[in-house]
Image (cartoon, rainbow, N blue to C red; front, side, top):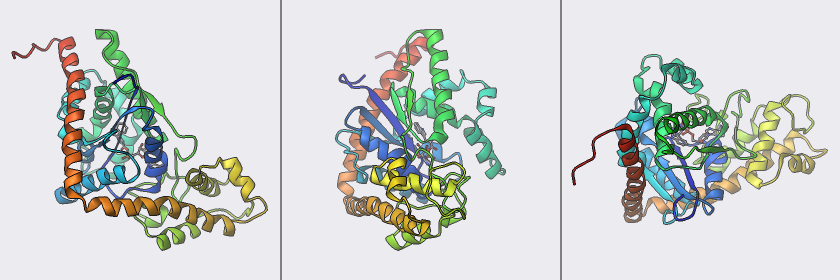
Length: 334
Ligand code: TYM
């Protein structure tokens, strides 16, 4: 609790171009929850280097992601928006938690297996212990709730297990966090292969809608989305491409999938696809305009980065000191 409010933590990697999946699965919910909680939204640049990055590109992407958080509607005066690498407590708590995490637990992480297969020439220790850093992110702020897409659930479970293990040994140190998964949009699939999630690292750019895509590109990608030959608008796992389009439309318009199905009753895919395109454009256009405006305001962004980095450091430091005391590290002499 901070000032009587429950705490929310979430983050995104500053890698690749953000997709509509990142927006509908995470960012959109962050904005919706931001009044109710004391929020920490991190640009998790330390996670990004588990895969080799070009330094100039990483720096640029991190700033662009931070700008995008604000452009999406998160007020940086109320929400703590900051770079993970500016708060050294993340790395320090991750080290401690590493010593309470079993190799077997990390071996089971599907994201590790996927990324290790994709980057077989660089299976580094950071890639393996990535979920421990993620646990440190969340536990440092004593977060009650963590809004994420479904793909992060396994990491969240590990975080809860680590927190419980630690609390069992040392008393109530960490708050046990709950995942918050949105009702629609928690797993947006590729437009070209609806068996795969929409991903920043997809080689086929037509499978993903990027947050900075222009309207023509968005419309073209929606019109070309893979569906099926049944032709009838229903919301079922047997028609995964169609189901995904209904999810996207519903998440963008605030409707339920059932309402969307009713709206398109008697119509065909030729009606639905452009409507999805329009719905996406109407969500992304204001975001892109605000992003362009904010990007020019260097002094404003710099002040946010400084103030919020310090605020995050203050709360993270409190938890880290508590952890150090519990495990028996000597007190600092002041
Ligand atoms: P990342 O950067 O891959 O994704 C950021 C957020 O977007 C969600 N997401 C999706 N949601 C729905 N459909 C999709 N196709 C889709 N693709 C991505 C993700 O679930 C995530 O919520 N490990 C995290 C970053 C992280 C983090 C944290 C998150 C580091 N520390 C602490 C929460 C709390 C990741 O790689 O997300």
